[in-house]
Length: 80
Image 1: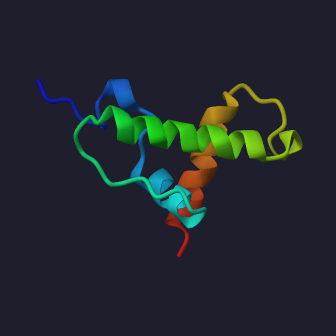
Image 2: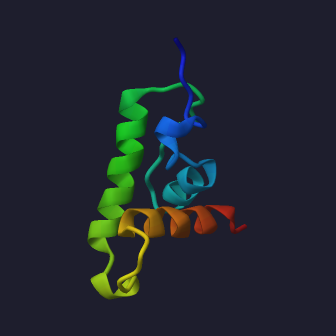
């Protein structure tokens, strides 16, 4: 069975986020099918950005910090 990133299991996968990571130097290959190494690199890159960012850049919120960073990276990826 072939799964893809747009299904429920991989809800954090977003092409705009991937583009935002690329702007920061994290080249994550485009992938429509599940690839544990690509997805692991994607999540690890978001985690690294989260760890390097000052804690005060996202104050406490109901949304987990990982999701906030993912949303911010997606917005950054959409910028020209």
